[in-house]
Length: 373
Image (cartoon, rainbow, N blue to C red; front, side, top):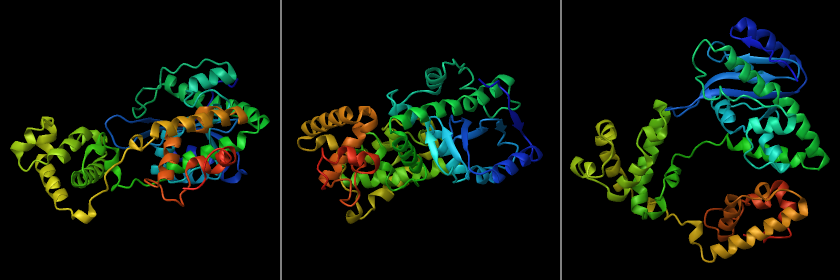
């Protein structure tokens, strides 16, 4: 296996040859990874970008070079990452550009029966029989200078990723599953390009379903303000005001500081946001009745939900036996719930087919479930 050998790119002069190489080459497969820090911030802070083309590894310092030309050059090529959710979230925010195709080896491993959340260390041990030291995974990637042990660790995250990908790609192709795994990776990558609807974030608050429409109108105003504050100030969302406290505000709707203090919000939240929270509650109370959010109906409260979900799980088991694909890859409980909601026309429009009836899943489930909403 390759030694820990890499080019460190910390200046525009060092970046220039890599840009020429990427722009002149025909599209090729690149292993990509990021190292980042996310503690009390809303956005993850990129500390290092790793690239491996099968011959040479590049470690790019985003704190020292202009990244936009690099994102543009990289977008011409095919990307391979492992557990790419946070990596793509960062890249989407910084550039809005992904590779020509994007493949998640965690997804690929799942299609081969290794579980849906196989970590990188276990993935490399399984495919290449190499044990990696993950001791640097939680270090400060924004501190400079980066230590030699950090750089070696970061380089191995892509140097080993590419040969492991090529190995599972061959396995997936032999079993006729590679295109499905690529399609699933593409679908998951596309989710990272979705813009958060600030008017819908109130639905993510724990126990929001317990509130009536008028209370939900207040909660909607509070949650819209909170996510705007988090994004503009780059604060972790619960470090603005905790979600449980927003729920309490919507439920009890204090009209003055005395009533607000009785809700036992942390002193810091009261000191910084107390008056603003009271104004937001009042703003929510002024929402017209016609504009109230609809009551949140939990899918588990649907009539015959338990029976329906059990029947669907039996279908998934049957499809797994027929196809040879793992059940957790075919359909999670969330996917089954989406199908049930679509059938009930509660949360899905009839023309928006559920995941169970689209893409690579459609021919597998078409003869097992009702396709009419």
